[in-house]
Length: 100
Image (cartoon, rainbow, N blue to C red; front, top):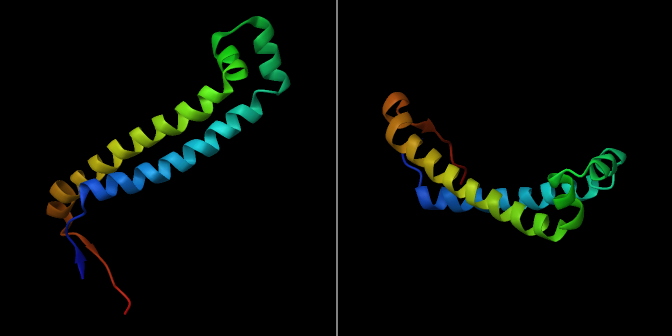
């Protein structure tokens, strides 16, 4: 069998969900790193980014996954569209073997 078309919206939704989950991991990582000596030094210097991370961690935990999901949705839709209308014409599609 040859994969000739990918549903753009379903690809976008799948990538958005994956990106959202990765965004949660990334936000938790940023929050955990906010207590490192380097970030404490940055707080003493008074940088805006360090203050945002240290004092507004709940915003980081909410906004990073949502932003990642939006970016993931857009990139998933664009990737499926590029595959459907450009890659298939150039390569003929991807050969897929399905198991019964």
